Image 1 (spheres, rainbow, N blue to C red):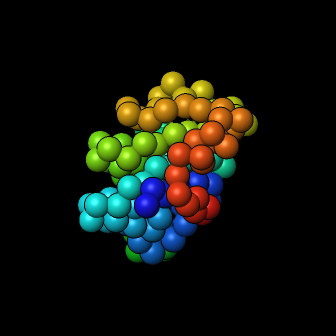
Image 2 (image 1 turned 90 degrees about the vertical axis):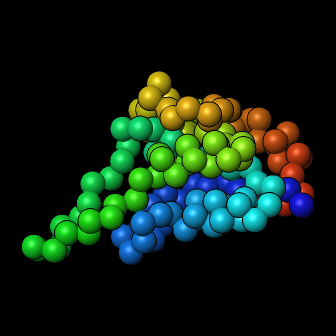
Length: 126
């Protein structure tokens, strides 16, 4: 079964965890042999840009030392053979050009989504 994951909600649970749980589970399931594709849209397009990291948070004198490194996590997905696409319109809506996008990702137009979805058995929207 092939599953396309459309991720639009960014930084989900990253305050408590070292990864976005959706990206993490895709890594884990891909490692177990699952067949996945990913589309980054909405605010999750930030995950594809090297400059969009988030610094550790400070709570008084306490620092959350293990901030997620989402561009690295997404790049690792692509390196594992997961097709990762990024919606061009969502980058543009946020004033981002994609010029600093991590390697191995594909820019696509929103109008291409229906054809891409047709290549998968299921579509999960996050």
